[in-house]
Image (cartoon, rainbow, N blue to C red; front, top):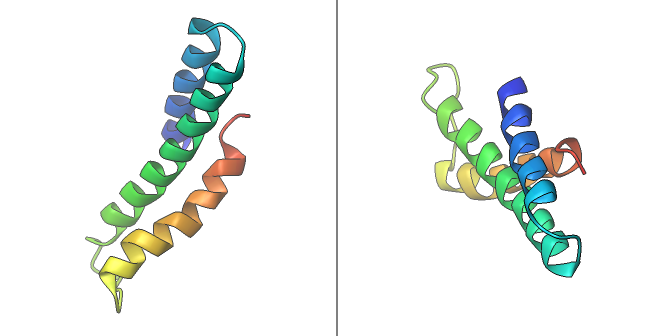
Length: 80
């Protein structure tokens, strides 16, 4: 769990230090937060699905929609 936040913090810090302040940097920053949030949630859902005590009625729905809702948590927990 901490590794998600370390990686996202490093990516977001790189954006803040490598680009001049302005609208383009803000759009890149917000887009990166959205992409990292969904990607992190999707990968965690994917890895949990191989655990023998978890089962999904609709695996496709769990990957797409479940990851999107779980990704909402990361939208607020990744540094802003």
